[in-house]
Image 1 (tube, rainbow, N blue to C red):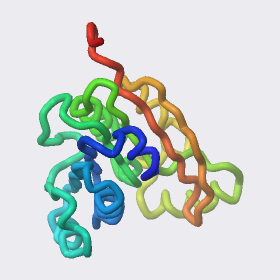
Image 2: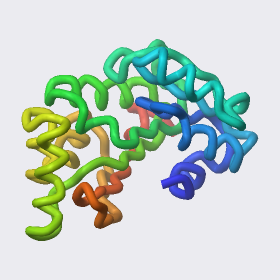
Image 3: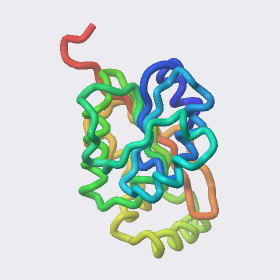
Image 4: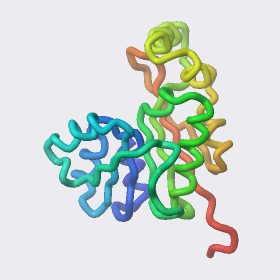
Amino acid sequence: LQDRVLDSTGNLGTVVDVGCGTGTFAIDLAATAPKVEVIGIDGDPDVLEVAKGKSGSEGVSWRCGLAGDLAMPDSSVDAVTMSLLLHHLAPSAKHAALSDAFRVLKPEGRLHIADWGQPHDPLMRGAFLLLQCLDGFDNTRDHAAGRLPMFVREANFGNVTSYERLRTVWGTLELIEASKAPAPGAA
């Protein structure tokens, strides 16, 4: 995921890690690409305090906020990442989070998602069933059915690509990227 994020920014610009949790990905990204402005956003202030206490955290701008209500200007960032965030959200909140990611991205900005996808086989389905028991069936039903790319398209993203599906102990981790279409009349 990190390589694709950096490729989409050219190692310059601004990346927002929405639902950054304890900040591991945001900190790694900032350390790898010091010319990229990395912003970590999470709705849990206690989790952000843990992130701020980690080595390398000074390379990230930490903000408290919700995925569907990002306190950022329209068309202001080059890339948005969401890693293991969307399966925690109800379907309406998934739509809001993806729509707000679209709003804050610059024309031709990129969205990068790592989240649970449709299980590969019965073993992966069984593993994901355990995760669904923990995280809730309503929030994860669309993931189990393989509908996450559809949610991304419904938020007006183009070039939606599921480029890798990884087997894990909790099920199939799907890596998705998409682009924001250029603004009408943009050269």
